[in-house]
Length: 272
Image 1 (cartoon, rainbow, N blue to C red):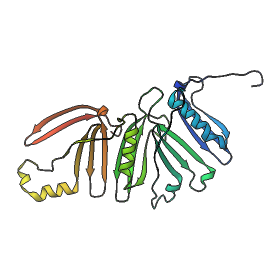
Image 2: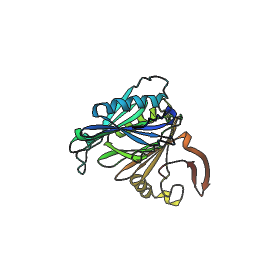
Image 3: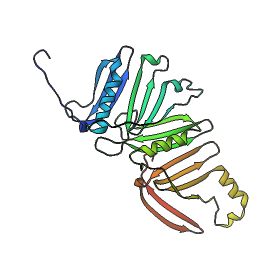
Image 4: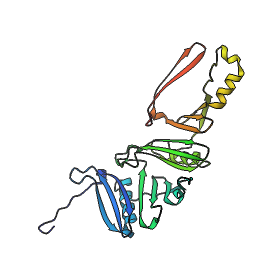
């Protein structure tokens, strides 16, 4: 200022997240903090400096200023095109690393005029997990990745990524493997079981056509692994897969009703 200066020192533990964007001429770095005086603010910088400044801040935030940590590339993928959104492949790209899910959005008409990026870290500065749930679904054309986080940015609290149908399971597996709430190890299958069809165990079970119809129209399989429980439901037009890490499962009970056994599972799910 003309009559004085003021300096505010923000410690790494006070930073919540960092974003970047560029316009036609300038670049912008958005900083979300828990500082009572500054709160959230945006810094205008030269366009060429936006990404390098963001990466330096993000590295400090990821390591809490304790030095550099080598970042390993895991997988890159782009949003799938549809008839209603033919430019998605060129406007939305994603990169999975061992530290974060990196997201880049471009302006459809002219990508060089407007680009914004966000790194969704697996761990917050406090050491707690940031991405709390990763699920998947498919329809006749595409696959969908449903991501739920504790990020304070309104666009990234809960969002869905549309991908090629054959890629969705592999992408979700990589995300869950490196996410802080999942164990950093390969997932090992322990047991698989299927939900009993309508009329199972009762007099209706003698009618094979009823059971066969129920199984083909709507079937649900459950897979128990070393990291959690996976529930996959098939419908004539789509599938949906919900992953429950063991940290989300709070209680498991069982009881019998007539001729059918029931497993009652109490779990935390962001979609509910």
